[in-house]
Image (cartoon, rainbow, N blue to C red; front, side, top):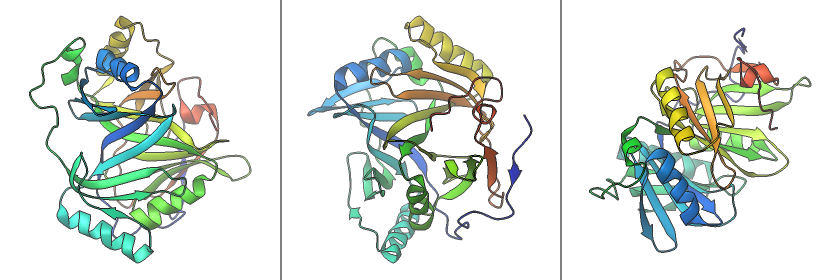
Length: 298
């Protein structure tokens, strides 16, 4: 597939004090948290621990919280910051923007700031706690708990994605990597980053606001194969892929969890220089999968 043409300058402009962060955990709403958690235990080697009415799950470089609630709901997403200086910079950004925030520690962070995006999704930025499940014995699927699959990005759907993009760039300090644009020039999907990786967050236009998927970054093509084999061994069907995305240029495969959330395992995500211009991709199947079928969910 031909590479996208890059715009001469960012659609929103790249902030000089771009945030530095990495996705640390996700909290998912689940009609049956125990059943959903068990899926992730069996397929991805998560260890589980009950905390009141929710469950905390942890494996190598990945953490989830399962809480009672409607399916396909992002209760919160937590991004780890490298140090207290970065946290202070983010607090200053929020104050300057006049954006409401809550300060203080959380179960996953020793110190943090919590904000809500324009759709009401909660995002927490803080200093990571040590493992909450250290020393817990493994169970079925535990051998995959050490397989490489770092929690890497989360994607939401929104009726008004432009508001979400403005919030992430102008308030939080993320940087726009690529847009997917329809024939009338309307932006259908935006990919944003807070590190050298192509994206750690994305949002696409849809008839409803909801969680779409979360993604784990593994090492290479062979590990994509091994994760597909693992899913097959658990009688979990690969719903999309293997394939290669246009934006990000990464290999991928997708499965569904019991709540209908897309779960992606990816490899070889594009590494981006700080001054790389914003890309613009056509809204077509080959943008989403240069090898074949693309799912144009927007």
